Picture: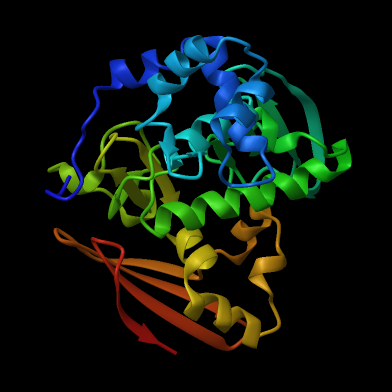
Length: 302
């Protein structure tokens, strides 16, 4: 962290303040309040504690980290809001599965129907037959994402959720801690389970290399990986505009149909440092995006 942003409370101390039922109730009352600031007496009555001294003891444990005290009363800090958000998401308390949903789409490789599955807090989309399903997507999803939706609405919800997460990491924010995400283009070996070919000495046929964008959080070390051409299709305005000009609205396509817009060609111009040319084609129109090892676009050709 920079000098202006330093850790002033140890994690053990911060989370210890949340171990009491009364303190969680205080956070929930402030969260649900119609007004931003609540007075001491209003807050105590809403929590349901008669003893002002005992209530003040619990409130003091929250002030500074999760609650801010002002002349007008008390309100939540950003940390307090995130605690309530995490509780509401069911991240710590809810569990569930969804029976597989058959999507109105077939895998380009196997020809089998694409299935949406949800278990162990993870959504998986794919045909189930291909080792690397062209339409396959996988991501952790909190149970609360599906709350309030009918079963037939779930595929569209999943597609929007995936798009949102892709935008978040490509914009540089960790989905877990909001820390800085740094991007790097890697060459992933689709013919084996080994490390990135860019880090190995042996030569591999370019047909076995699948460029991906890896996003690494500089704070909590979380990592996300997205196929390079998927990342460009979902986030780069030049690519989406190219398709729109040729009658294809990328934003309206479900996430698992994005693979149908696969590039006509991917050329690995350099392995060290990595530089990749991605060519998109619609009829006679072509667009070439040249990307460097940090996922920056260094050239555009039409």
